Image (cartoon, rainbow, N blue to C red; front, side, top):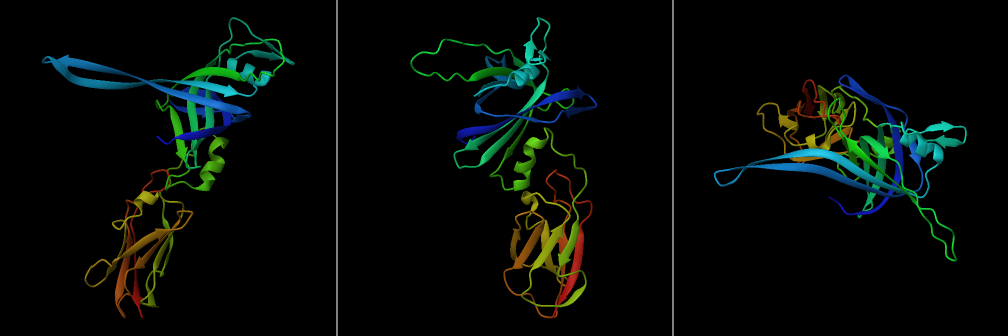
Length: 294
């Protein structure tokens, strides 16, 4: 785990439904003044002993415990998190108040300057302790501390969502949209090759040309491999040696041959079905084209 040097951007969202049919949330709400977001992931381990020694072991993930320290917590926000009735400008706690389940989002700054984004999916806050005292000769700034316990969804047992800004698959649009919704956008559409240069059946292509595939959406850079993107001689089936690169948006993959292609030779290009988009959807069918050099 990377070292952390800061934390910011606190959000919460009310969990509106969690059943075997699915999960839904309200609109995320920003809470300014985050000082600390302490996260303890608990687990239990059981060891079975046999033949006079440890024989087998099992690890079970348990709840997450969170401690938040914020500069201030508006009364209305506090009442929402604690399930307290708000009447006008007043909060009116009762013995029957039950904290609602909420999702909690925040961003930690890593030592390399990049952010790690979090959404914790399902937690309940406990009422905060208060320590009020008279002002003396020196000022004492007292932040607000609240604690929560988080568990997994009923729907799929998932507990959290994490995004690293220095991951090879990271796009700036992911960070910009991360706190706009708790759950990632659903995507079941496989990627496709929307265009290729040289075009299919093109002739008279310069022997020093590259091959570029443009996709319908960003693709997982881990699937940009020599086995998934191939250019080969049509008559012999021999693969052309070269290097693969991709653009900043992960939508264009370019193959640059190590040496010039052969004049008047026919080449085929292939993208196979192991190429995936950012949601893990694989191409439904391979993309195969050919072109002829000048």
